[in-house]
Length: 171
Image 1 (cartoon, rainbow, N blue to C red):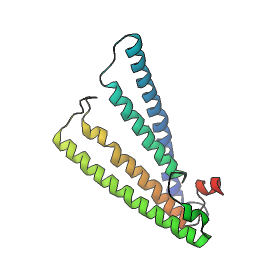
Image 2: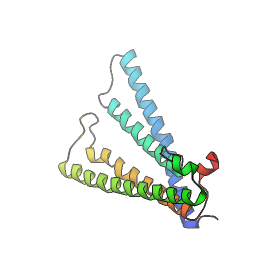
Image 3: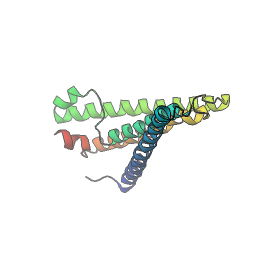
């Protein structure tokens, strides 16, 4: 059974965004880290913001990669029972796991947004990068929104007995 067109469009758009973010942010992190090493060890200088920026770019890229792993249903998890269960109980275990994970991601999205609002109101600036902290913390609600979409799609796919990439790889 194929996905509805609207659901496939959401998945395709999110995949396009993830691919661009993973590639672009990883490349920027590599350039930032490499230039800092060259500046430090060749010219005995550097930028105070580069380490913080390197970490921020790397974390953002890995959050996008985590969303991609959730898309492929290939994320790290405890699924020993589901692997060895009969098809009926396996579906129930998968639905339960995806529903709980979706709930947790939505909670992190809301809590992250709450903290973004707090840091925005406090007008704090990260001393390492000079960036307003709310802009950095915005990674949490945005990435958790992407994770939430991914788990909602997985939940629908499992409910409708559509295969996930994880099943195709593992079985």
